[in-house]
Image (tube, rainbow, N blue to C red; front, side, top):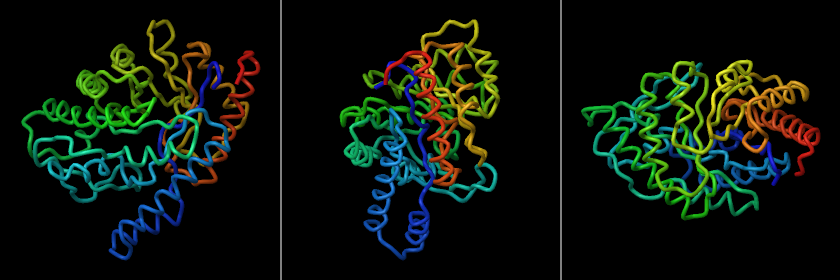
Length: 326
């Protein structure tokens, strides 16, 4: 790998049309679980091939088996969670909001099998991808716990056990996403408590992704979150978040979003290089990773591939400017 400016993505990729159709057919009872699983593996293999072809350093499996980042885990925690009705997530996207109906506890591996499959397709590291305990609770109805804190900390134990299983399987990067933290900055301390439980004792590099929030008031808490790496959006907000990093001492690594995933437009090479250079004004290349702002599932396959190709080329050119090998 390179000595700096490692490239990755946040997690999700767009599902190919054949998988989208198959998921609809499965929900209608027209195909079985084994047939759907085979197509999910096929799509995962395509995601891995694309990332290798583009030249990313740290890969993701693309979340082809997941419809929603919260509902997926809730369905596998069926002894303590149920799936409710449709609610709007953002724009015209909806998900079935889970309901906590009993004491949360880990029921067995939820992500390890697909991670092993994806990792077996490449020599490059594949991140283990988990939804954070705060987001799992915040994006669910709670009909069991008396307090949010109790629910989050019990959920954190569930996520911790899953992270331990991923690490045992060989995952060297484990990402615990907390996008819900962007809407409730006053609860950042609870977010931190949940992450501390979820990542306790892990030897893998741990990271969390948060996006599209006003973090100025809680910046000091963000840089103290108990993970090794913070993954932040920047391109969509014209890199304003970097201003918060200036003049503040912190020891975290940062994954900087240089692609706006909420636009179809493919960034120019110079735009991405300029974004990387702005990140380098704040952090040395050894502590700076480069990725899109957020997951790519809202884009088409062609748009996602085109954006990533520009990103990787931009990183290669900036590495050469810096004399970094790799």
